[in-house]
Image (cartoon, rainbow, N blue to C red; front, side, top):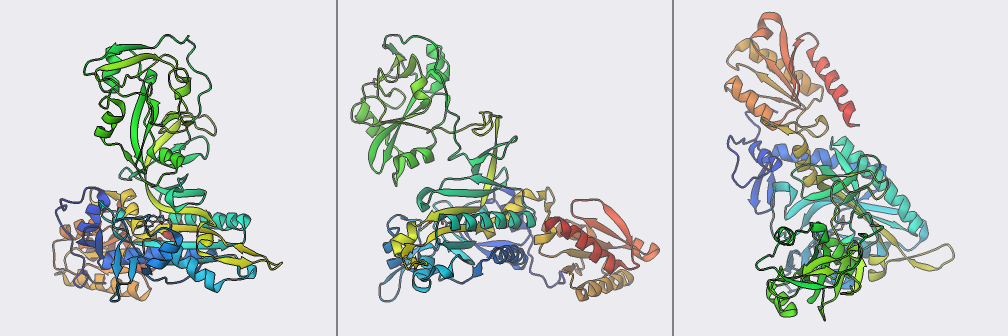
Amino acid sequence: MRMTELLAPTLRETPAEAEIASHQLLLRGGFIRKAAAGIYTYLPLGRRVLAKIEAIVREEMDRAGGQEVVLPIIQPAELWQESGRWEVYGEEMFRLQDRHQRQFCLGPTHEEIITALVRSEVTSYKQLPLLLYQIQNKYRDERRPRFGLLRGREFVMKDLYSFDRDQEGLNESYRKMYQAYSNVFRRCGLDCRPVQADSGAIGGNYSHEFMALAAAGEALLVYCRECDYAANVEIAVARALTKGAAEDPLPLKEVATPGQRTVAEICSFLDVTPDRLIKTIFYEADGQLVAALVRGDRELNEVKLQNHLGCRQLSLADPQKVREATGAPVGFVGPVGLSGVPLYADLEIPYLVNGVAGANREDYHLVNVNPGRDFKPAAVADLRQVEAGEPCPQCGAPLSQARGIEVGQVFQLGTKYSQALGANYTDARGEEHPLVMGCYGIGVSRTMAAIVEQYHDDRGIIWPLSVAPYQVVIIPAAMKDESQREVAEGLYRELVAAGVEVVLDDRDERAGLKFVEADLIGYPLRVTVGKRTVTNGTVDAKWRSQDEVPLPLEGLASRIQALLAEEMQKYR
Ligand code: 9G3
């Protein structure tokens, strides 16, 4: 490819709306352009990267026994009504009508579609296991699309669905996919960590997420350096306490705490440490008011609360409703004397002795609050956010915390969809059973952004060779110089003939600008033809993140191919 022909409109300035490196660099490097909020055009360089990632995904899915299909993007509402999910996803679902006013959605995922396909085509246990997948656009009307390809409203996903006879079969499919995912992300050069994850609304009982570690990641994970424990903080298990404070319960007492609302204010005013406080946080769970209790030094984990309550909608309660239910404003509310509001206490609450809580009276708190004696929780469960430094639930070593980009997720669905949609198979004895399913997603366009998050510097992107848009860029320092141009053209033609993915920067521009753009776009290997090529027969070769080395013109094309082959070994 010649730079005088390539559509790669680079930008010198960083577009204002781009906050993170991958969003900035993919725009500035001429890889993507925004068509609308969360909706992108992939320019030639961007499409080439996408195609490389897709090829790696496809190879690994096929190697794991997957069969590729193409499923419709437009999906009939009837299937989602059968599965009961048509109402579950509100505004996030792109819905449309056809000319006969029949209702459809743009596919945000394909459990319904694939299960409907299989229920009509698979009847016998002999056809199992069956792994079907596609790589295609998905549509989710995110409220706040941002961070470029990381959170878009139209994005490329590989989704695979496994169909097995029983749990044992599913375990085998799950294990194959887990390995395939590790291969995919390793071949993309991504530092990626599988973590235990919440199966949430999708249902099923077991799930992992593959997290690409990156400071810009929206997900928070905790992991242990000593063992393999790693979990999305949404479900990371807190180590249960074994004993409470060794002091005698004292009589409950109301104390004036004028204007003292926050944990910090109350602790300094009453001279107690935050672990003595009971934070009472009100939520509306499917419209019903509930109160969650965690210690003052902890954060409530809303995913754990929602999973415990099994509710569809969970949101912080409106302060007015809190005042009506307790007689006090937020900051002075507590569990004692609260009738009609079910209390959900974190595991640590029952161990509190002589704690502090809001008195349900403005400007007053209660001291010497003793759970069990002064209030009775509706339930006690692990509801708090695990923090770095806490003991690993597996081995006790202190947990570390990191941010990650969720680039893959694998779920054990069980029979949730096969039962809902009547997808059964007949076993060897002629008995009918619902198919046991798993589903497995990779955010392909999100992976592209995650790679940039992990591979960039202040000059631009540093593409791993396995996913680079082109492998080599040849830069004649001066296109005007006849001899430099000839050497560059000759090398270019040799490499093209050898099947190397090479760009020749044949623009009549200053060498400096060509270097800056080559580094911004992030070509892995840069070969400069300059004055020294003419005087002493060498070119300067430079891996994007290493120093320049002179290479003799003699046998240069085959030397470059050998260098590329050697570098590709890192991404097997
Ligand atoms: C919807 C909308 C958004 C959604 C879903 C449905 C997420 C939905 C979960 C999954 C689970 C797996 C197969 C590939 C891997 C992920 N957001 N999920 O089901 F209608 Cl609007 O998609 N699906």
